[in-house]
Image (cartoon, rainbow, N blue to C red; front, side, top):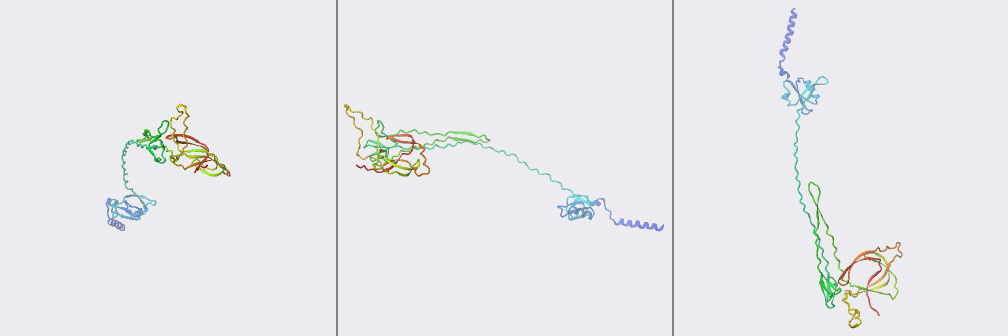
Length: 372
């Protein structure tokens, strides 16, 4: 009995001694324990109510963190002892019953609102229609000249550019009055009225928010100036001729503005002399008083004529296309239509339209000597 009593007292004393060695903690101090994980897992995290180093290490390694801080007297709100303040996490039970930390995401920032620009009003410019007028080109008329010869009481065209024969006077913008009842003098031409063409402008609008002016200008017709009749050559008077000797046929190439052909030159056909052309006095004498014989017409004169090229003659030969020896005959002349202008009567210019047929003669510059 005595032994059992003292044994119980001994065991109670041991327990009492143990209770005196363990510190007594307040309820707040019992909850103040934290585990802060860092290194290798971004900014890291902190878990409250963890007071075991093995458990803290397991939480950090499971989350990929290689370092941890354990405090038994602090919590995550102050930074867990010496560790910096990190976002908190709640430990969860892992596959082996070990608490696993689940980081609590940081509060998300509210989305930033992008200001929307107000629409800008675009001003539409007003276009004023200002048409451009192109001036009409001025056509300079070809001057007409006249040579008045007092000694021969005649008139005609200049022998060259603004040049008359000796003893003749040049008149500008004049024509020879050598027609019926004329006095063979130079008369000033009546000025021709000049008309100015005004372009017609048509304004066309294109349907659009901004009006655009479109205008059409009527083209001015092109006027071809009148060519001056050549005055450096004489008129030619041609006579039929008959050769005394038989001449051989000669083959040449003849080329002009119409065609180029191999041509056979045959016998001579015409002799053309430079000549002087003048108007016939009017009225012509038809009879003489008393029934006398009318006076004969002009008689040949031995006086040298005032010709521009008195020694220049033409001899015209008959011709035909020569196709001998050619693999393909030369094409026939297709014909042309031309407009000519000359003055058969001195000072009276006339235009004629002619149909050009096939070639018939070739006229060569020649010399001439009268033989017995």
